[in-house]
Image (cartoon, rainbow, N blue to C red; front, side, top):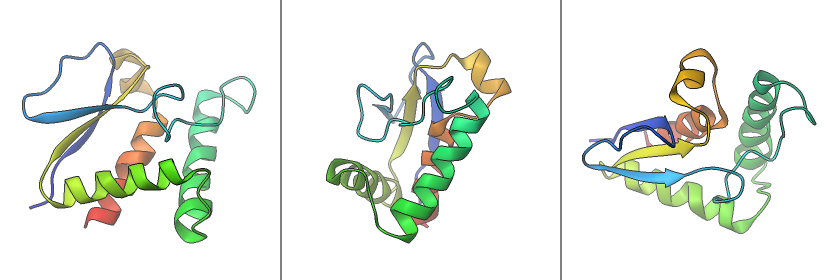
Length: 115
C-alpha cells in the first residue's frame, strides 16, 4: 500500500508515524530555485517550479543536481513501500490554505512516481 504525503508548515505539529523532511531552499536539494519577487509572484514561482520539475527533470532527465534526483528517488521508494511523509516548507499553515507551494508539486511528483 502506498504511503501518504502531506505538505506542512514548519510550525505545524508533526503527525504521528510520519517522517518529516524540510524542503526549503537552504535545507534541501529540492528547494524551489525560483524566488518570489525575482521570478514572479508566489503563484508564478510555483508554476515555474512545476514546469521545471515535470519537463526538465522528469521528461528530459535534466536534474539541477545529482542530490535532487537522489532525494526524489528516495522519497518515491519510501512512499511506494508505505511510508508516510511530511514535506515541510517555511510557509505558514494559514498561507498554505490559500495558496499552493512548491511542496505541493513535490507531493504530486512523488505520488505519481510511487504509483
